Amino acid sequence: MNIFVCIKQVPDTETKIRIKGDKSGIETNDVKWIVSPYDEFAIEEALRAKAFLKTGTVTVVTVGPDRAVEALRTGLAMGADTAVHVRWETSCNVSIAKAVAEVVKKENGSVIFSGKQAIDDDQGVVFAYTAELLNWPSTSTVSKVEFGTDGKSVTVEKEVDGSARHKIAMNTPCVIAMTKGINAPRYASLPGIMAAKKKTVKVYSPSDLGLSDSPLLKDFDYELPPERKAGIKLSGEIPAQVAELVKRLREEAKVI
Amino acid sequence: MIGFALTDDQLALAEMVRKFVDNDIIPVAAKYDESGEFPHELIKKAWELGLMNLAIPQNLGGLGLGVLEDVIINEELGAGCLGMTTSISVNNLGLYPILLNGTDKQIEQFVAPFLKSPILASFCLTEPGSGSDAGSLSTHAKEDGDHWVINGSKMWITNAGFANQFTVFATVNRELKARGIVCLVVPADAKGVSLGKPENKMGQRASDTRAITFDNVRVPKSHLIGKVGEGFRIALTTLDHTRPPIAAGAVGAARAAMNYAIKYAKERKQFNQPIANFQGIQFMLADMATSIEAGRLMCHKAAWLLDQERHAEANLMSAHAKRFSADMAMQVATDAVQIFGGYGYTKEYPVEKIMRDVKLVQIYEGTSQVQRIVISRALLKD
Image 1 (cartoon, rainbow over the protein chains, first blue to last red):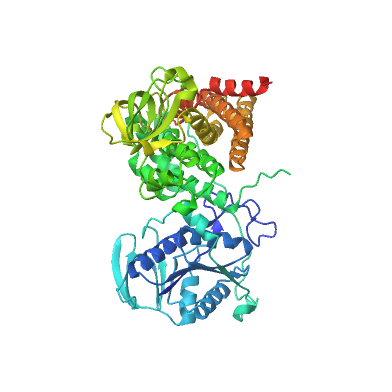
Image 2: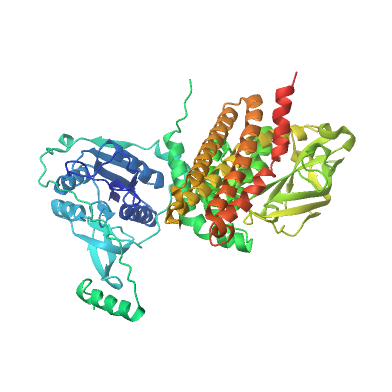
């Protein structure tokens, strides 16, 4: 079983986001990059699946600029066996899905794990596009993955509306996107970090995969959320303040 | 040529330890400080992450890393809890005497088992009557056939209550002073070893500190590390290797204190504005940052010299790093409490713990005064 884990390098959750002057994206100069947390769940789940099945390989794959190799190194340090880097700076999710699908075909992947969405643009579509391109079944917001011992059948548990759950059975090959809480991702241990640099990162360009740089989707007009207005402090006699508060809650905040 | 860049592996290591500290240590540090309980689970986790016993050579399955990696780890751990940093890093004190001076067979017998499970080793040098004047120790070792027989008491032994193995310094003849000292490996379960109660310490309460008594404890002759009379040198060269990481723990604690103070200074309002607007506060923060940078550089340089096996220079630089970082961290922690004012003096905020914890760095593994002796002797040497 060759498990491919589709990961994305995203800004750290504590990054102070600034928008580029032409609103075409965010400023990336001072950004600290991390593996998208949902994708870390997917890496952990893949490592556990490999341990359960006692066979196979785990490959982390990403589509992104040169710096994205750091995300692959993190995956390798956590315990993935190999990595594939498609060097392509594109925000077009269709292009990314095409690249992943081509890589998985080329490298004989038998299942794809990913996070349910990346925490930067929150689109949550690459796993589904990829499944569609490969004609594989897929499901998302998965909170539990159970392989049959043959490695062919797989049962996943899905969260519905927070706490309700149901199960879906599929056969591999398939695409499974994980949600929070499925596991506690391991840290990359020091021996893992040292072993990672001896592992290979295969590099592809879009043309290696027969793809051209013609995005079907274009990102533009980024805007920060409006700054929060300061609160209002009421003054005067208490009964008057209460009346004023009720009035504002009803007419301005419209909560009562 | 000068280069200050860490390798990708070292940066990834720092990042990993920072994550471990943020997720696993900081949330429970106050709890362990309050209870004085020993953090077994966290030590196990640190061991699993490969943060202990770094110097064990690769041919035995170890990582064969140097002191710089220990320095990087300890700065990050120190930013979380200095007591746990001590507990996690003290195996180095117990194992370096063997790694630096033992035969291949001794290293395999006494050090390799530390790769198989999260067991602990303690370094037993200090005694009730001999601290800074370590050469005057009185624990006695006598040859008896195929064995050494040890009698005496040790004091302030870190991790003693949970260690599997003790590295013990004893004298064959007190009149020989420093030249009469031997270094012996003693299994913790040897007959005649008895442990004192855990000390109720001011700080670093997550580390275990006790007295140990040796009453006719017998170990085979193969447990002698180095030769008779080399024990004192073995103890001192070991301390050269562990001082930079210990100093780095203080740098980490100071960094944490500064970061807490920065956050608080931006939030706390007096005279209708954040206290961070006042130059009195700003300059305290600026001084903290400068001294932390200086401490870190000394730790890195001392570690680098050790990793280059430039031992004579390293001996001096380790003393500089330890003296400066310990005193600096005490000052930074005290100033951080000052910035927090009354709140800083309570256990509501983490800075009073840092102040209690870093005090010990001025005392253990050679007091700040002993470091000054090392430094001034080097200066005045003819």
